[in-house]
Image 1 (spheres, helix red, strand yellow):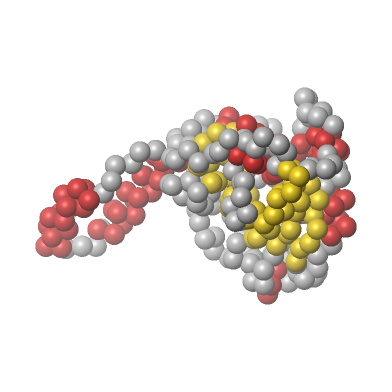
Image 2 (cartoon, rainbow, N blue to C red; image 1 turned 180 degrees about the horizontal axis):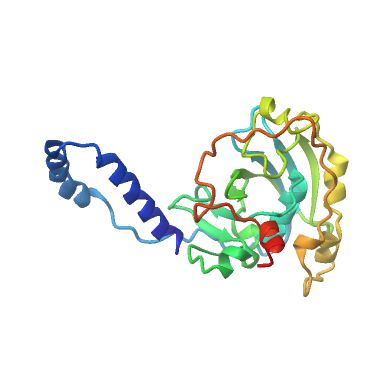
Length: 284
């Protein structure tokens, strides 16, 4: 089922819930407004196409990447080649934030990663699952989404915890070397996997030894994992990114259990949590 159909079904459920307690007189009054509302609602014409032609020459982008709703802010500043595809950008973000690529992800242009007006760039599982709301991230270059300082690309990792990142292009200059990406700055530790969507320092202190810690050398060590080195050498065939991107151990406390606040969005596209890790352990 496509995201558009799911959005319609969710809207119908919300509408049914809203009118379930109305009395007959209110329902008749509401019914009188519906034809007027239909006349004023523009027809849905499908998702926009916001991709641009790739740049003629490879350049280096300086990106500021911020985690949504993080207090204090959690961010990374990256320098990355413009000609990499978004599946590589995904791996860069995983390394920069210390995640392990266990869950689904997607990129979006023009709005949030689940907004109707956005263009979506999908992870392999969504593509294989028949999601027709976007194209594969592996088929889209970074410079088809960002080109001028101020341009924004959005990303979400884990449709349950909903780690949403905003990638904002800050500077552009000619490429002089083949390194895919380096991290030049950042602030604070990222939330660990499967901690329930928490982003504030008080809650993160219960699952991290030091939420204020940011280790630049550790991030750049992860960005020199075999996956990136082989990508730089243009070796891609038969290479599984999820099994080769090296992750440094996270400093996670064992004395205090993670608190799991109520999620801000449904736990996944199908109302259930899904992860690549759980699929592997279940044999699917």
